[in-house]
Each structure stands twice: as structure tokens, then as C-alpha cells.
Image (cartoon, rainbow, N blue to C red):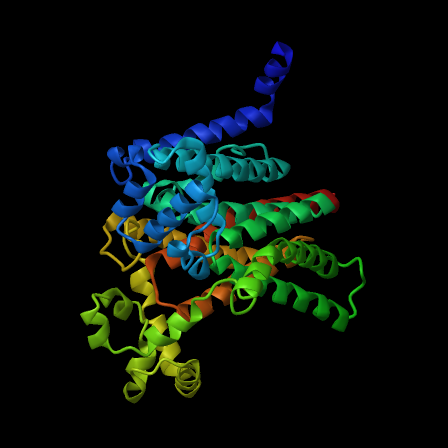
Length: 438
């Protein structure tokens, strides 16, 4: 046994993983994100002190699961408006560690463990291009306050976005391996991301549509079956089909016990809120909805305020598409450059936060350029397919959803993630071209 333990501790992967884990666990505590005393709170206390509704509802449902093994009638509505993944995950943790445990620390360990694995895979890719700074470079992802707060702070942890983002990034990294096992694992992780947060189901649907479109384009262009466009798109399609298979049990549950096989039932609320007047929203203390453009349909067509049907909502949009889109787009700068400590409505930022948000925007723009520079790479169709899908999905979110600062956090973090890995791919491409030119 001692020899086996010695072999484990001498393993470079294990030591690298532990190093990342220690950094990620220490970082938010040393940075004192939201106050050191919050790390010892129970789940209910941490959710309540977050100041947001989602974590509180998740906690209530998780307590039911830990006690009874399933959702009770009082909290069944939670798994209609949100997918069940994070709720059941919290419920399992409560059953293991107890309802009075310091749940933020438990969630921090889980998030750090997940992202340590992601960082190790990024490190492996960096080493394939250059050994210099290969271990340190992936940590650039967590040098930004957006990642620290959204993925490692108490408030970010009880929202559950860390689980969705970590699994989504893991899925991307497994697709890049272009192996059968990698595709199955990618599909599983993509599915977990959708089970954790509902918008990832939308992301996966967009990715599947775009990647199938690439396959059709490959056929129309009469590309050979060994071309990078065909092969890479095929790998992405297969991983997304696997994801849909892993997601089918929850669709079946909604089909049997609900109205249809939708992932969540929240679109009806969207129609009603969008057609609600400012006066009624203010009377209900929902001013943040007005600020986020939730009732833009009512602003554009005041005579339709008070209606709640989807047909009216769609008619207003189709007849006033330019005013609608430009009105929502005008809100973006305030939400992008908001203080990182805001998750809902934007807060004024300081100079440091302004600089970091500018750097995040730079990474996103530079990432777009890198997609073009690696266009000859075998992995280019995968990266273009994923990034194009996410861009299209976020346009839909910005146009139709109530804007919140947290809705832009994923694309900010993805901008850094893709920038780093695309830079690696470009370095490999340059190295290959140098070798072939000799």
C-alpha cells in the first residue's frame, strides 16, 4: 500500500491537480470575497444572505430532497422553472454532510476540484505547444474577478453556475480529443451542464443545429469525408447527440408528469412580464425588471400592456424588430462594465473593475480574431461551431430575456477560456508550419 501511495504522490498529474486545488480553495478566502464569516454558514443562511431568489429556492428544494429523497408538493414548482441537477446535487451534499454543515466550504471544495481538472487538461494542451509557463497559464482564467466571484465566491457557489460552466468547459476539452471515449464523456458533461442550469440546454441545441449545418455545408461543397470540416463537425455532432441521450430522462419526466417534453416551463412568465406596465412592476417592487428591459414590449406598444399571450408578444417583436433589438442592445455597455460584485442589476464600477472588464472584452474580441487565424487547423470547425453557437444563443438571450449582470458572466469567462486555448492552437500551427518549411 505504501508503494501505491508513494506512486500516487509522485504522479505529476496528481501533484499538478493538488496544486491547482490549493490555489483555487485559497484564492477566494484570501481575497475575502463577501466576508470570511460567510464561509461557515449553513446552506439556508448562505442562500438567504446572497440577496437573490434562485439560491433560496434551490436550498428549500434541496432540503426536501435530503429529507425525503424527492421533491415535495411545496417545492415541486422549483424543478418546473429550473432543471433538477444542482438542486439534487445540493440535496445529496446535505444528506452526506448534514443540514447544519458549512455548505459554502463544501461547495468551494467541489468547485475547486472540478476546475482543477479543467485546468489540468488546459495545462496538457499548453504542454503540447510549449513547456514554458504551461502550468501557470491556465490560472489566467481565475485572475479575473468575474471568474473568482462567479465560480468561487459564496454567492456564486450557491447559484450553481460553477457546476454548469465547469462541466461545459470539460465537455469542450473532451471534444477536442476527438476520440470515441472523449465524445461520450463530452456528451455526459454537456448534459450535466444543462441539468445544472437551463440556458445550457439552449446552448447545446444551438451547437447541434450549427454543427449539423456544417456537415450539410461539407456535403454541398463536396468536401472529402476525410476533410477537417467533415471530421471535426462529425465529432461535435456525435458528442451533442450523446448529450441529448443523457438529457432524455428529464424530458421524459416532463412528458409524463408535465405538459410536454420542454426542459423548463418559464416562457409563459416571459410573455406576461414583457407586457406588464412600469407602474405595475414598480408596485410589485420589481424595478430591476424595468431596468433590464423585461417589459420592452409594453414600452414599444403601450396599448397592449396588460395582455399575457404569446401571440401578442410575437406580433410586437415582428412589427418592431429594430426598435426592440436596438433598445436591448443599448443596455449592454452598462451591464458589461458593471461592478463584478453585482449579479442582477448593474452597480457602478471602480477603476480596477473597469480595467478588468475592458480586458475581458479584449479577450473576447481577440478570440474572434484567433478563430480566423487557426482556420487551417483540424480543430477549427469545432471551435467555430461552438463559439458561433454561443454567440447566436447570447444574442437571443439579450434580445428576449431580462438582462442581468450574471447573464454576461459566462461569455466573459468563455472569452478568456477560448482565447487561451486558441492561442495554444495557433502556436502549434506556427510550429508545424516552421517544421514543414525546413
